[in-house]
Image 1 (cartoon, rainbow, N blue to C red):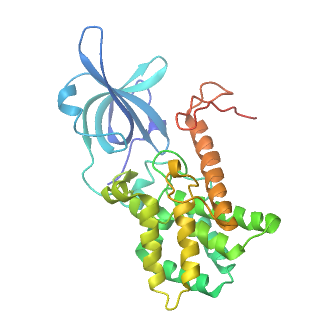
Image 2: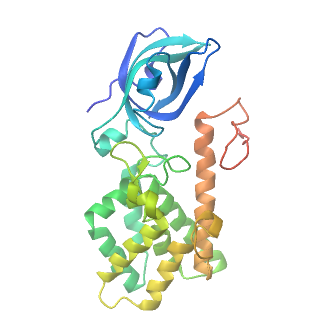
Image 3: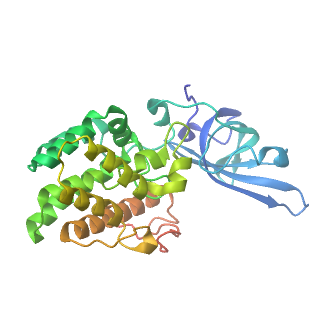
Length: 317
C-alpha cells in the first residue's frame, strides 16, 4: 500500500487530497449556529496539518480514534495562511502495514537504522561476563523479538517516537552507562545488558502494523510486567544461568522507572540500577523535549506548553 501525497507537498490551492495519515488529535465542537463539527490533527513523516469535518459528524466520529492510521478523502483549502483539509470521509485503516510503509507516517530518527544495528553489535561485543554474553546471544537469535526491538519506537507519543526509537534509546543509555561507570564506578557489563533489556517489554506492549499503538496485552500488563516475562523466557534458554544474576537483571527491569508513581513496583536498590533509572529518565526527557520542539514552537525561541513535562522550552541558537 503506497502513500503518494505527503503533508509537505499539500498547498492551500490543491484540490483533492485522498491518502493515508496518522490522527494526532480529535475533537467535536458546536459552532455558533449549533451545528456540530470536528477538528482533526493529521500527520505523516513530513509534517502535520489540520482538518475539519463539517458534515456527517455523527456518522464519522466513531470510525477512528487518536493514533489510528486513517484513509482520508478531502479537499485542501487555505485557512489563515496555512493549508487545511476539508474532510468528506475518514476511515480507520483495517489492514496491517509493512515496516517500510510505516516509515511514511513517522519521522526518522537522527541516526540511520543500519548504523544503530551496527552500533548494537559493537556494544554487545564489549560485554565480558560470559553469562550475559550468552543471554544477549539468545536474545539476538530470537528473530521475531530482535526485529521488534530493532524496529519499534520507545513510546507512542512522548519520546523516540520513530521506527528504531527503542533501539536508539537503549543504545544511548548503554553508551552513557559505560561513561558513567568509568567515572563513578559499577559493573560495566550489567549496565550495558540492563540498558539493552530494560524496555524489552515494549516489543509486546506496542504494535506498529497499523500505526504506533498499544496492544490489548500491553494495556492490561504494561511493559515492565511484560519485560520481566520476556526476560524470564530468555534466561530459561541459558542452561545454568545464575539465580543472583537473574534477580539483578529482573530488578533493573522492575525498578527502571524509579518510583511507584512512575510505574515501578520497586525503587532501584543497587548502584547499577540507579544508573540505569537516571539514564532512562535523562535520555527520554531530553529526546522528548527535542521532539516536542521540532514542530511545536510557539515562536522562534519558545516551544508550546508540554503537558506531560508541564513547561515551555527555550531554543538556543
